[in-house]
Amino acid sequence: MNFLFYLTLICFLIYWLESPQFLNTNLLIVRKNQAEALEEWLKRFNWNQRSQIGPETRLPIYKFYTGVVELLLSLSRKMGGHYQDSLLYLRQGLAQDRQFEKKLKEIINGTWFQMGAMMSLTWGFIFTSLALVEVEVSSFSLICIFLWQSIGLSSLPLLIKRYRRIFFGDIGVLWRILYVLNSLSKVPLSRSEVLTHAGVGELKTIQQKSLIPLVEKLKDTCQRTLKLGQSYEEDVKSLMEELRFQEKWHFELFEKRLAVIKLLLLAVFFLPSYLAFIFVLLNDLMTLM
Image (cartoon, rainbow, N blue to C red; front, side):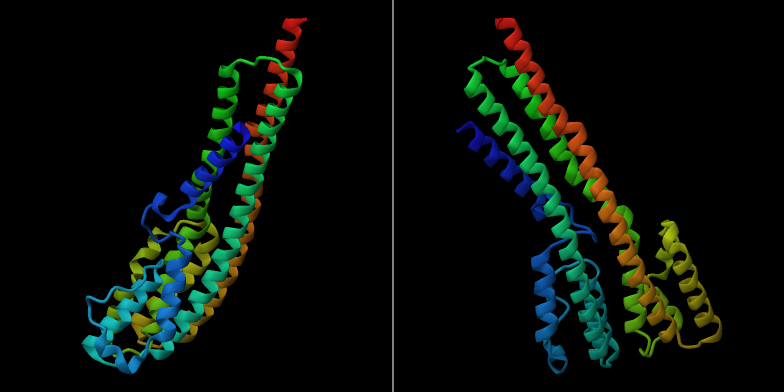
């Protein structure tokens, strides 16, 4: 019964930590249902009926994609024009993003499963040993072991959130800027207004070293566009392909970093708990002898 109780507690803790309500609302949120809902909305959307969609219409919120769609609809209401190609391109990017997030989720869930299995095996060993040797081990020792493992388990979502922000936060900013620039490349707006809508000023907030060359290229493109008035469409599409490559590379780095985190958590919080129980058990046995 105790084993089932602890197993249920572990499953509840994992569900609570992974549920969307536990996370703050920001651009890095991963909500599969929202992504699916937005993709379905884009599939059903008929541009000829866009007049039926007013400013009060609430779209499914997913990362920066919703903001780009709302911007295109707003410009269409104010200035007219057709943006079907931009929405189609955005939907393709959304589909790729969902696949990317699915892979990340599989890696994270695999880490949760391994840590939960390690914790379950440890407590299964503890209860089995106590039943076989019939030795009274102090409740304080067992509580300390459980709390130590719980600290390791609760550290995982915090570390994952931190490294997601490190590896993918700046990439999200770049994607939003590039998608807006690509969508507004043929809109009858001045180049300065287009760059303002795209939020090009946020490029200075990007600090990740691996993205600096790409940021510098985008800055040069924007400066040439403002000075010479030339089209930036081809440059932006090339930068988007380069950013896709960078994103895949960051994914590999994140996967390796997560493997290191998992190893450290198992070595620091779970293996010592197993050894600590053996030490406590042998100490109590020696006391009885």
